[in-house]
Image (cartoon, rainbow, N blue to C red; front, side, top):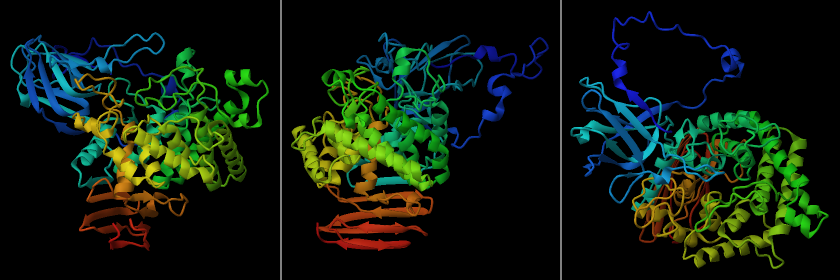
Length: 631
């Protein structure tokens, strides 16, 4: 992360034919650790990291200080290849950043992480240095680092750099593109492109949260984005590899580290804050949610079988936390626990919704986060019950279905008022209640209506954070508020997706207020979690969706739905998705009030097509077309 230093003068002797290496020490073969016990080594299952493409500068500017600032026109992950390194002994400093300061120099303060305990900022890093050898044709291209950047500042050059002597090299895992989306609205297309670019910038062997400041495999980020990623790229092996890392780093008591792979391995570090933040609801639940979603997308039963012990260990850990500990405020209010509290997860550290607009996130381990934690306990236990049944573990299936139902009941006791309203009046709490099926049947529509009202009260702006942003628009669309979903999608200003696009974003920001009106950046400008909105574009605008019920007969798109829900003034859309069976296509347009839909169904699959007017058609392989004049 910090960068690479290269002194090209040191290459002179040993890199040329005839060099006398007799004084060099011989190689010593290591025999300890993994070198001694290679049984722990496993072969690669994910695509390798590659140079994928090159980007030339859009502009090159020389500042009054003599520094050269290059704008590559897009935020990316990779490195810079630099020619014309100057005379021998010239020391060049290459600083990478996402934005420019007021003086047009590269700004890096937003990329400074900090020590969570002391709150002391750490260096921004992303600085490479090279000392020229003076040889004609020498080129600097780092081999041991990648950076997240749009802008490059070169300090120390004594001559003139030209635009053709600087190239950005985009680097990420060589994931096969498997999907595309386009519609009649240019800004939505730009949003889609930004989401894809953000994901690829963070697909560098593992799913990182950002390619610059932290660059870590945060579990919560991948569990909210994995479905969106699968609509645009083949992430089967990519997820498979990461899930193996997760299982390897999971603690003996089932705790899932917040970051996978984990630098500290599969146990506590002895550092209080670091150990405390592991096992957070919504983050640790990636142990269950990611395998289940990956199976639904690709139909890989073997992955479920391999991850099953890890899935069980996480749910058992969460259920044990609920059963054996109570929040101190609850103990003070009534010393004897009530029956439902055995399934109420109200203790331990949880990130919670994290980065809701206008709310400073809390790192308080004493905060009662049972609204989020108990919801995830119910949801993950329900998914695990289905996996257990699929794998033939009947006793486990019954156990985890019971845990899910009882946690759902505990959530209802704590979160519903006598008149059926949610006690936590946030968009996120309502989205979670709907998406995780936590509500009694008679309250589903009233809660959905209240969610729509909260959105209207916010001026048709969202107010969600990491966990529920990707679920917001589907929750509205599925419960009679499609128009509201589109108003949120097309909203501008703060907070909104198109607000980012209007400010020139080429990638998705970590914070909704990632860039002020004056251009000052806060946090990473290359974080994919909020890009989970891409799922709405593919599933609801274009209409390509997995089957509602995930079974061995339907997963991997052996059976699927095509159900476009047009709105927002969009007059046409088309998308494709390459499945294990072949390519699915959905293309529609509205002309003179008539909706025309064309679909392509691959061999060996079945599509259930739902037109906006309500007509349903079940069709097999081939190309089909329908018209609907109900709009």
